[in-house]
Image (cartoon, rainbow, N blue to C red; front, top):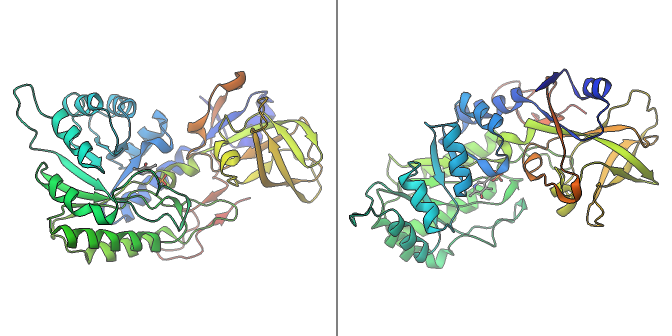
Length: 400
Ligand SMILES: *Cc1c(COP(=O)(O)O)cnc(C)c1O
């Protein structure tokens, strides 16, 4: 892969007509080391946030040993890449054949579920041909919790309601070696109290079911930094989670797990796009809703941007983007702040696209082509840079 100091050097050298995905291995390595060193339990990487094999290998090399996989495709891909990794199949709705292959072929022992039917499916699919049931399952019951503190809800689709949790926990206990409770507070949780509230619900579920719980998995939701969405330091999340986990009615040997996706990879990638046309305060660029900018279009996520020309002198103004496809929905309202004199032919770097950005690219309408380069400069924002000590509160450094 090409290697450059930064996005400007890429543009000067290649004058690219296709979008260029830039990766920053050092940023992903730093995020991995931070979670490995500071998260008060086991941090497993949620692969769906960005399934890039290069990224997964960086995380592994920096101490991330557990991977949250959600489909048999992710199981196969991560297993082929990392034969030693611990894979946890954390999608509560799986096909029986996927469970069977994961268990018997790929050594997966950890599964999540949120209904009695899924429990029966997992138990049946992990029973061998002689009719002997598995004795080494780790089963995590997914509890529905509030998404009110998060930018993207994950409360509607999965999770057993607290009122129905006790019988499911009791039934699951009968079939597993280790029983866990998991939840997801929603993506980009802007306050650590989201986890405190969820752990209160875990406490109520354990008390009601009166079962021994071996694993508490606080899921994903750990934030990254975006314009208008600058969260408190991750240490605040970790400290509150640790304190409330310790206070649960569970044994001393119970394990705390987390499933960060976004926080481990958001800083890993950015993209260079070219302005093809300007119409007032709208810029027609060569990537969009069907490319790496899915969230910018569909949930109006604001990613940081910077112009890559040296000769733009005007103050910043607000722009909206149109992507390259012929679809009106290929529109990103922003606002994105760029020099007022930006015009067709200019290049823009859009940052913080490592999570749910680079992973979302499609080939719709023939616009999927992309080049890739590694760059050495820092991401446009970081939760892991500019740390004076372990307890700083101003550790969101904007490098724009
Ligand atoms: C998507 C997902 C994650 C990762 O969530 P982030 O908000 O990216 O941290 C973790 N666990 C499960 C079960 C998920 O579906």
